Length: 380
Image (cartoon, rainbow, N blue to C red; front, side, top):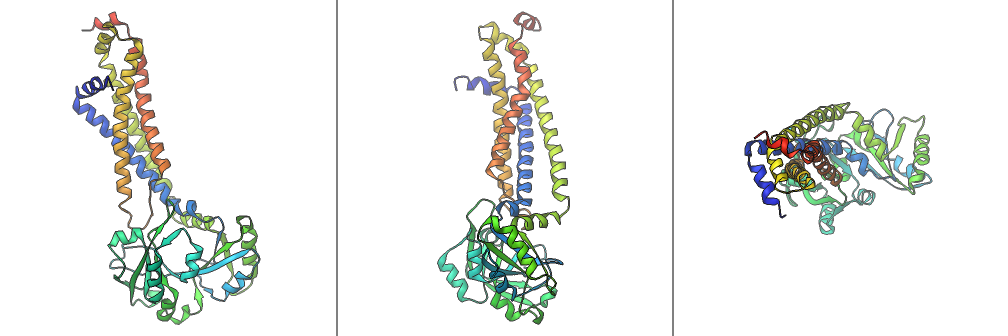
């Protein structure tokens, strides 16, 4: 802190260049944060998937309906602890761009299957008492400004008749782990089967199975598929993480393209920033020679150069990461991708910023430390 005024005075000498250098760090680390959030969003379902949960879908595709009678048969398979079902609703709220996942569920079974989603007990009772009641995620509620008691109309997709369905918000859930999906919309299966076309009666979209132990997952998955082999509704059973990974792969190489392009831009910005900082140090050779001439040791001169560089990197990097965190929190994809910035990514960004500042100034700092005072003063 003793030499902080000297550091700040050196940085204020050329305010425009200092501002641009800090701005370069801001842009680079902002991009780093956004890329990290995108990557976390693509892998969100994989990372938070339950190790002891399986997903059972139709062998042909996820759109293939399965009979409700399968639930009892699955429950009797050794190693199965609990079973529940769900169906995709796919309604539209106001505009098609207002996408969010909508699941038809059996309430109590669903709550037991996903204990990581916390709901206020009083609100849950309100939900159970209202056939048209729905539970929504905290992020979804924040996005549309919904609160318990609000009425939400959705336009059903064509395969459900395309009519208007009215729902009442009765509860808001929140995740208990970083990265938990808080954008879901839960519909009671009783109300769904009342209004859905006849071909949905007695059928569901998929089953979620909890096994007694993660070690039993592979054996139970094979047993479930064997149970319904050669039937009109054959199944494909996967662990929840494998199911989430397969869903991500359906999006092709979008993640790779975004990360590849962003990474090139990010490292280009860091190279430009590092070069700018190195030039700034070299321009001050005479001033550094004066410091050595009046008695400051070589180590102090080197530390001064490194400190200036690290200060710029810390300020610019910190601002960039804060901006990225703020942008990610605003749900810029409107529910298409649940992005979040993990704490590990923030730490990695801070390390990258400091390391860049250190590397950029290391060679100039060493040169300043080895500077010959007489030769440098001759340049005045």
